[in-house]
Length: 332
Ligand code: KG4
Ligand code: ZN
Image (cartoon, rainbow, N blue to C red; front, side, top):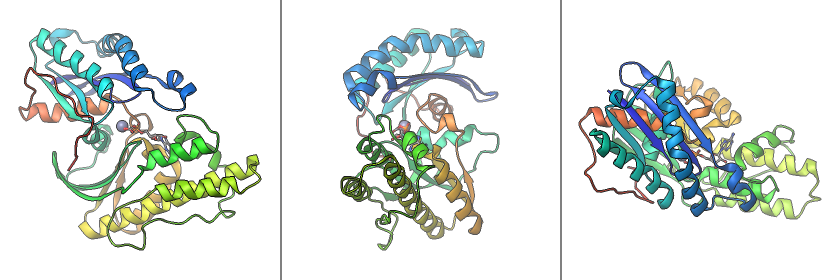
C-alpha cells in the first residue's frame, strides 16, 4: 500500500509518501517560523493561511520525488488532531477532498501516535511492546505501548509541556521563537554548577511531570541577576540539565515499573542532544534499548503521519465522508 500524507497541525506544512513494501519514498516540509517569529509565537490565523498556500506545492513535490502519480497512491492520511483547529482543517479538507476525487480511502491520524511511531522509520526500529516518552511542544507523556493503538498512560504533565517550558524560558532569556533549540545551543557555553535548579516531582511516586515551576525558577534567577550574557548561558545550562535529569528519572521509573526493555523517545524535544545522551547512558545500566527518530523526524513532519496512517489503513480503517478534526484529542 502506498500512502500520501499531509501534516498541518501547527506551524509546519509537510507532505510525504510511504510505501508498506518499500518504506519512505519522499518527504517535503515548509516551516513557518519566519512568519511567526516577529510575534514571538504561532499566530493561528497566519498559520492556516500559510498552510493553504503551501499544501499543494508540497504534495506535488512529494509525488515528484517519489516518482509517483495519482494512480500509484492507494490512500491518503492526514493529521486530524490535536493541534490548531484552523490549521488542522486545511490539511483535513485538502486530504479528504483529494481522496474523494481520486476514489481512494483517507484517514485522520492522531499527531502523538504519529510522533511515537516515528522511530519505526529508522533502519533498526523498535518492536512492540515498548515504553514511549513523548516530549513535544504541547505534550509530555510516558506511555506503555503494547501494540498499535493499545496505549496505557503512565505519566503526564500536570501543567506545562516540556517543549513549552523550553520555549517560555527561552523567551524570558530573550532567545526569540522557537526557543527550545536556541536555549540548548546557548546552554553549551553555560556553567551548569552556578545555579541549582530543583528536579520537580521526583520525590513523589509515579511518573507525572510538572515543568511550570522550573520556568518560574528560571525567571526569578534571571530577574535577580546581572543579566549578562554569561548569566544567560548559565541559567540556560542549569534549566536544561534540570529538565533532562527529571525526564531521565521518570523514564527510568517507567521502565522499572513495566519491566520492559525498549524505550522510544519522540517529539520535538527528543532532538535535544543532552537528553539523548543522558537517556542512552541511564538506560544502558538498566539493559534497556533506546530508540529515537532521526533529528529531522523529531519535530513535526509528514513522514511519521504517512507511516502511522499506513499501519491503520492496512487494518482497514478509514474515514467517512464528513470531515472532522480535534483540537484536543485524548491519547490513551
Ligand atoms: O513535536 P514538535 O515539533 O511540535 C509539537 O507537536 O509540539 O515539538 C516542538 C517543540 C518546541 O517546543 C521546541 O522548542 C522543542 O520541540 N525543541 C527542542 C529542541 N528542538 C525542538 N527543545 C529542546 N531542545 C531542542 N534541541
Ligand atoms: Zn508535534
